[in-house]
Image (tube, rainbow, N blue to C red):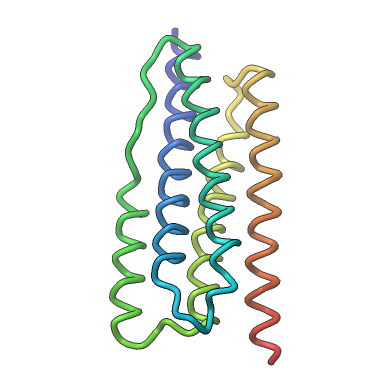
Length: 153
């Protein structure tokens, strides 16, 4: 029973941070000015990817006989509030937007690394998390490349 509880806790933590990520990219996409509108498709895709992760993770929680958590983390909510404050003081340039997105990507990468260190996870769950982690890492690298390309201009 303890194994199952730990597994559900890990999965619910990942659900929350994926919800944070999706909401963060939705917010970033909605707040884009015309000059940065080319980022919209990228942000929308990453949000959609996280929502798909949530669906998959929720299914795993359900298979463990529990109800999935549907909320967000407190830190994710604080991060979005910080983005609002920063934007109100003129921090809505392309580099700032991408730097904030990368900070969010760093957080979800860490969450997946931490989750995969749990020994209680079964192989089927580990396989799902590794696949999702691969997508998260690729997204992080894409955001970082966009940020670095802009900094080089």
